[in-house]
Image (cartoon, rainbow over all chains, first blue to last red; front, side, top):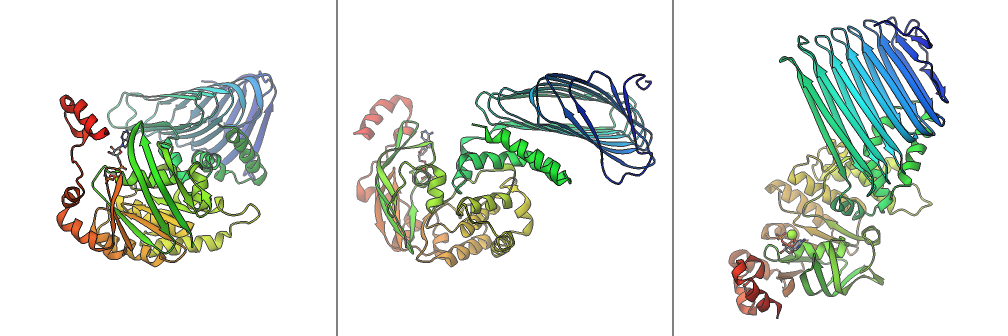
Length: 277
Length: 272
Ligand SMILES: Nc1ncnc2c1ncn2[C@@H]1O[C@H](COP(=O)(O)OP(=O)(O)OP(=O)(O)O)[C@@H](O)[C@H]1O
Ligand SMILES: [Mg+2]
């Protein structure tokens, strides 16, 4: 598939990076965005999405062969409606690590389509969604293995408090002939509000014998016995909830090496969980 | 020295009366053992003192020194000095053992004081080493995938670090092998002091060889029916509870275990 002909184009990995690159997109952006990773040097890119009223972003992310990229997305702020469409194409021997933090408010819908096009291509995607109030995230994630020995690993960590709604539709597909591939997905979530809901539909479509594939899904409430146990050691209900939620968020927060960004993420998370009942 | 005073405590679960007029006084420095058949209400007593919302206190009071605990939430009872080592410790995935204990320690510190983390780590590791827990357990998720014995040791570790005034240890010996029983028994015995009153709930004499009780209470059908010294332990170990039931004229006719056809009649007998 040809790269986008119009829109905004970013290229990384041609020159060595001294520190992570940052892309900031704010407001309602209609131009498609193309991000390309070259293989000369590993790249790390932070992409901040700051939506307003209604924002729609379309992105095409591509790698050269053997490129190595870390790409972080931070959705921050409140908007009525956010639509995010990302297509990711991983070439032979390339690896891309995607991390996406939904820290925003409002209604968000996400459509992610990833294809591993080249032999030995690797995609890791980790998503954290912490929602409160009446916010919602509806996400469709699809990974298509179109090459032998391709690897995908999806992790979704979801926290819904108040009356927030999270729906994740996650599909991993290994097409015939792509032996030696590994396709894994893991979804976990915790409900903190009586009216909150998390729905995850994991799917694996495997058309080849010699592969590894698996999915795990664990969604639950903090139950009375769990809360009793934590309280019996002196934790008040709010601290107990925060502790349980930190089990989901800590791995994402700890990875952020920029102190200011880390504080921003921490306080945003706290404000969402702090409002949980 | 603190005193826990349980007076005329009546507790129900889902509308079924479990504890009936339980009286118990535990002073700092004392070790009490509660023994009794399965399903008799021992764990219910411990949970009711800790404040589990499932258990309803129908009447009676629980006080710790001058503080009335009866209507306090669980966390406040804990911070007041009550501890419960649970029969079945709950698994909490995602939360590391270390972070949990640290949070629990911070929860009982005055707001203007900060935890000295270095000192805390040493204390944690020291306690874990004494219980032969293996250093890896600190950074594993709270009780998740812990063996039965590891969970029980973890309860004792928390008790050592939280330093309660009154501790209930509910079947801390179940799931422990002979060596672990000795380690746990010695660790608990080492904690004996005028600052700690303990209530051990157990079925076995063995634990009480390591942790010697001053008082032994027998609970049957939700009542403490006999209180004595260590001689009771031996007798129960060799003869069970039947002699006591006979002596006290306790009817073994349990409504809950009877076939439905006899149910109405049995309920009347038991409910009298
Ligand atoms: N939700 C409930 N509804 C009705 N009865 C209950 C409920 N939960 C517990 N019980 C009953 O309460 C009684 C006391 O239980 P408890 O766990 O206190 O016994 P125990 O003495 O600790 O027994 P064990 O030695 O087996 O641990 C039991 O008969 C149990 O079946
Ligand atoms: Mg019990």
